[in-house]
Length: 588
View (spheres, helix red, strand yellow):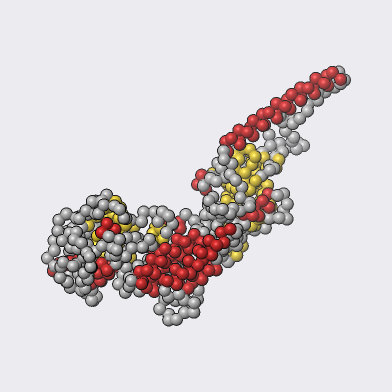
């Protein structure tokens, strides 16, 4: 970060990579300036922007050997929360791991500059006599040397490298073979970024654009980022996917980064990690379905509305790994970056025209909004008070008219004629109409407004929703057709009904041909309430035709959510259709 004061050197002897168990020493860097008894490798931007990578320029090369033979003073405590590496970086929380690289990912605190940093820790492996490198010493040495060579690489798609610690350095525990320190990407992991619901496809493309650019530039310098592991990727506050943890495993190639770019875009579109199933499980992400060749199915097969261009980018970038030439396969990060850039550019050019439906509802800040989107009342309490005031005023007018009618009848009518009451009999104190010989009759609630309720943002056929309360059973609303039953892609689909005022309901009639549909009837405090803020009234399985659901024990409410938790149909055609919803007010 240009313009800030230079980082203070660590007190005491250098924690440089001179003790790194690596067969290759880092090459001297022209123009390096002394910092501690090693030599810092500055970036082109100058010393204040450089990663404080501690090099081996002042020490002779050392070969990979067990640390116990090196004679260095090391801590014997195992790494864990609270461990301080290099007398400076205190480990706070482990946020992931890459077993193939023997690496753990930690959020740590820089105790000198009082800031969060990301630390990749290389752990000593359990000894295996049959292995040529039983404890992973040579592997770690190679990874440390590659990190030193990448010290000058900076890009918005990759967290900046700040420091490298070698095995045997003061303050490095005996079970640690090396560590790399980067800036902390504080916002979200890749799993957290998709946990809140589906992401708009074009927004997902913009999120990967800088990551693809970083991989393209890194490959041009002979470097590899390690984008093929989901826990190495985090999402910044401004919506950029970024490599947050370095030290990828040895043997990783630029082609692995290309597959990683396709996997990150695939995950943002579908919430599924398409590469290693064990990595997906460790990150808390499901794996997608696969075709007869073992390749993940295209994103559009899991989610409707994905543009064909992004479908093609994912398919071409993932490709069959190690299977030789593949038709339509993309082999370079530059090609992925160019393809995503063209999709984003075309979206910018088309900004003056309404977008095609992509399966996600318009966000409040979007220029184009759905025609059926109703503006939420700015002050629900004010609307309720206004309705109450109008009701009181109307009752007062009826009372006055009734009184005048009585007086006029007394003046001009027959002396023994009954009094005439003008207006609503209920407002004048008369009993409500009743069925002959039976209890009070419930009346259908009129003026019901309806909208699709879906907190993931993917509102099913929102333009047709009013057909479910238009009084015409010949018109209907239906969900999307899903290849999997709920809650595989989303927890449910709902219809939020709102009345002009608070109503005491007696029952609800649902006319639907989708037998087997399971609905929960919930009262809601507002139209935009979260599902956990609603109150479950009852659960019912719909039959084919008309199903009556009793609400006799419910409390007065102004908003009722019909929440579908299981769709009708079956197999790969799961869909529910609602022809008509009729709410009945309880009789007096």
